[in-house]
Amino acid sequence: MSLVSVIMPAHNADATIAESIESVLNQSFPDFELIICDDGSTDNTNAIIKKYSDIDKRIILIESFMSRGAAETRNLCILKSRFKFICFLDSDDLWEKDKLASQVSFMQENNLAMTHGKYKMFDGGGLNKKIIPPKVISYSDLLRKCDIGCLTVMLDSEKIDSIRFPNVVKEDYALWLLIMRNGFSSYLYPGCEAYYRRRAGSVSSSKIKEIKKQLHVLKYVADISFSKRCFYILTYCVNGCIKHFYH
Image (cartoon, rainbow, N blue to C red; front, side, top):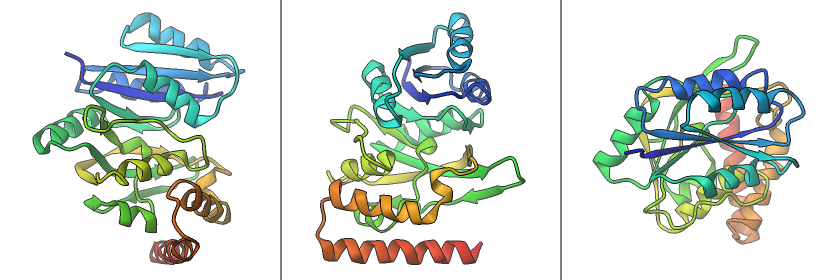
């Protein structure tokens, strides 16, 4: 019986998507479906996905002929998903072969609704940075900073009523806040089995933009007061400085 729905948005990713798909197909845990939404790509992304979906029926292609953005693209995949556990992998990121097996086992053994993991950040210039988030992350923790990598998250759709990415900046962070505001926490599963590819000029590489986006989510998604927003954004900046100078 299949247990896991893997959600993959894709837009003009023909240089990396084959490697990302292979990292899912090579999982030691075989009971999954991989749902890929091609978000209006103008390169060979669609053809590459079709090549794989023709061979392996666990791969489901959704074609969006207009660019919708990451949030709506992921939501289209979630609407198509059929299984209990939902997890996320972008079309340029990677998993090691035991990622699903170890995370599903941890979720089942501890009866958890949400888990996250360690991951490594890499690029084409020699970057190889390990991100180690806290063992438990609550709603109040998440208001201060987000240590959760989307590519490491697994959600139990039978425990969480609505899994939909808000159409806002930092949509993954916004979704985690909405989930945890309802009383859930996220727990660190063992191992470091995911690899995040940092692209040149990516959102995460621009700190000023990140602060502005953080403020936007705190105001319009968390819906907290101005004074609390000021406190949490100050905490966010301090944590960022500590992380930068520590490394």
